[in-house]
Amino acid sequence: MVDVRNVRGGDGLVGISDEVDEILDSVVESTRQATEAFFETYDKNPDPRVLAAWLEPRAWREIDYVFLLNEQIRRYGMGFSRTHITLLAKQSFQEAEHYEAVGKAIESLGGTVPVSVPEEARPWSEFLWDCLERHPLAAIAAWNVSETSASGSFEPTFRAGERHQFDEVVRVYRQIEIDEKFHVGLGRQILSSYARTDHDREEILRAMRGMRDIAWKTFTPESVAQRRRA
Amino acid sequence: MNDITMRDSMDLMEAGAVFDVDVAAVKTEADGVVSLELKSSYGQSLPGWTPGAHIDVILPNALVRQYSLCGDPQNPEAWRIGVLREPASRGGSSCIHEDVRVGDRLQVTTPRNNFALVDAERYLFIAGGIGITPILPMIRQAAEGGKPWTLLYGGRTRNSMAFLDEISTCRGGEVHVMPQDEFGLLDLPRFLGAPRTDTAVYCCGPGPLIDAVEENCRTWRAGALHRERFAPSVKPRLETGAFEVELARSGQRLTVPPHTSLLSVLENAGHKITNSCRAGICGTCLVKVLAGTPQHNDDVLSDADRESGAVMLVCVSRSESELLVLDL
Image 1: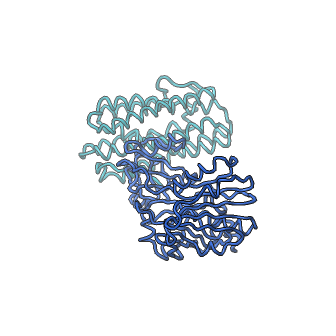
Image 2: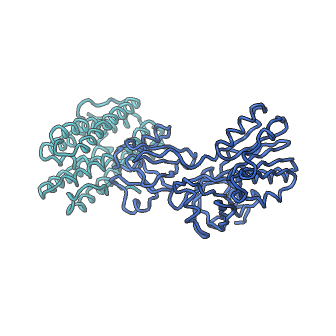
Image 3: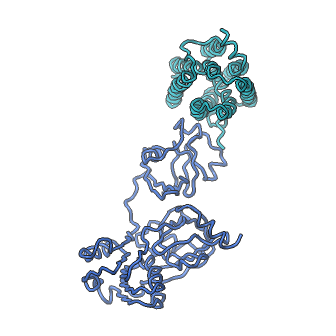
């Protein structure tokens, strides 16, 4: 019933909102397919350590979001309303909770929680930090795509969880699913509230298009296989 | 679906569930007292009830008031409530007396009973004014059960006392109609001065009457006296910006102060509402509204959802009306 893409804000995305929605729809579908492919492989050999390896880049994303959000607030926060500063800080807090929770799930599966950027997450992380350098709204646009992409992974993960009884992973991601609605809605509201010029909108689209091509890749079975060979 | 099945399905509704009824009749029963006959809006039999039960009525002005059922529990087609016009009405009884007409649709809740008639060998019923309403079906049940009963019925004047004709048709008991302008205050020591172990005492009416009955029942056995207070509807006024919320599934009522969110009030009362942003952005804390007018302060509900008034986000939204009834 509630579509956070329709969150009220401003008219900053007028003229590009159709493409923004196409990017978001596309990345959700790519991630869904990648996740389905991963679990098709996993079904044949349900090794918890493989699941842990699949989750490790996702754990890194959570803590990287914490760093990014706080740097976003530090660099650009005074250009936002106090309410938006608070909400970005709240998102950061939730991302930290996600890092903790996903980390516990990984350890319960016999994996290792990353404390530096895993190789398969490097393109994702470097792109986001580059966006943060470029423009006050670019990183927000990029992680709006990344967070939206995660929503494509939830249902396939929950179904696999029923098949393989990895209840803790399901529990963690059910909570993340709830919080992601807030994060996605907040990002959309900030973009629509503070984008003012064509240059702003160009940077937003650049960031979103770039992340569309990156976000889904760490969900694939190939990505996990590569990690395990390393 | 036959009537029995329909009745069963209405009976399966949870206590406090809200549904529609139509006003089938409005009748003046006494000075300042009207009765409303209520029937199902969809031709169904109404939920069953027992003497002493009451319903919540959600009035056209969104106020919610409780009224005892005073009709026949054996009649599943209609309910009856009696409403006294309160001199200091804040919109409840005055709305019924001035605005409610035959054919109007009201929302009501399924009956609840905090004043049930226990089994006893004898009954002493004491009613003050509109307090006769829960007592009347009790008298009928006692009479039908062949149990001796006595009614002591007081009021300001004989003309202000409702249902006198009906009471006169109830068999097997003693009726003492004692309006104050003829007899003064009720002679309680005469009826309560000698405690009886075989008698259940039921009292309903204004606070001073109940206080006096309690005083006179001090020497009776524990549990002999059952009472229901009909407090005047002058409640402490809510401070500006505050509103009340009623949780339909339990009947619990909470006050939401002006600077506290509805979500916080619900959580502090022990209700777990899934939420995330607490800022009106994510839509997670969406709750159904059964009555009242929400004041939408969120950023994400569609215009259609806002206008329907059927849902709200409790983290940031409040109420335009004095009371909200939520599906919780």
